[in-house]
Image (cartoon, helix red, strand yellow):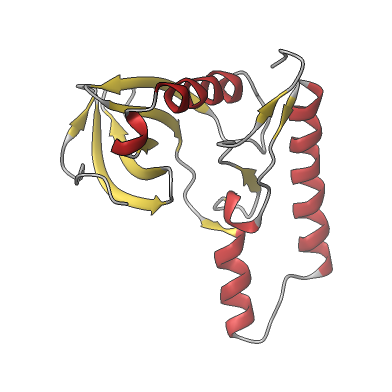
Length: 171
């Protein structure tokens, strides 16, 4: 379910959309430039059919606000939430790299796998991020290799809290 092409357009009068990074059932993620702060960001846009659902938009906004309050080196940062006409979007930290899913697939294609040290390091950092989020009343509920990006130093970053559950009114 593709959104209208945003590539080359400006979103919210601010973010210049450059390329599609990924697409799922609920949203699309684009690489963009924030000219005000002179930095590259990722912009997550809700698909048009979901933008018409006030309950979904409210949950998307809650996700943005909750994740924006999480400050952990292994959790993606949220910078902004807004809308441009009927297009709701979240502005995220742009992390160049590949998902853990892509990395595992690449390794499997060559008959290799992560070393024990790499596996322990990734598991330790992601469990630390999950513990941090849980202490603040948030449960991720969709931890999988596709939702972990390995940055250019190989550090894992947990992303896509889209179906996270906020417990006890925390975060």
